Image 1: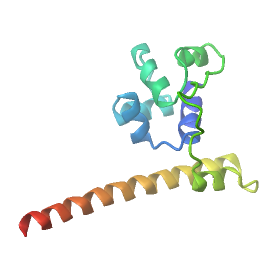
Image 2: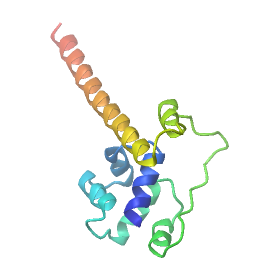
Image 3: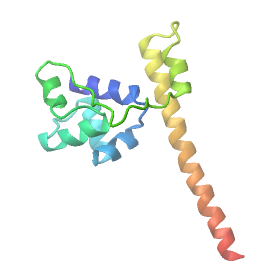
Image 4: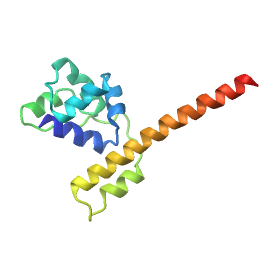
Length: 132
């Protein structure tokens, strides 16, 4: 149950596995094990998971007890920016939930690849300027 809730919340927040793991201050593989349910998650990791998924403290324990997590209250009154690309997928009524999840996962993977490519481009520009 925890694995499904964690993955659903990560996708809802448009976070890649890498971004969620970084926010939780854990290894990406550890986060993957959390989502696939292949290993038991240590209690000392709960706070990081809750922080990454913007849940109140005690939410992971609540899920393990069969209750719902509590979303964290925003720190200010401004609404989070809408991710138009993700919303387009979420609001398409012709897509099954599985299709939505897969498309969103592909979007997040593409964004991660684009980010890595942009960093490499920046490094190349820095090298070019250093040489001149």
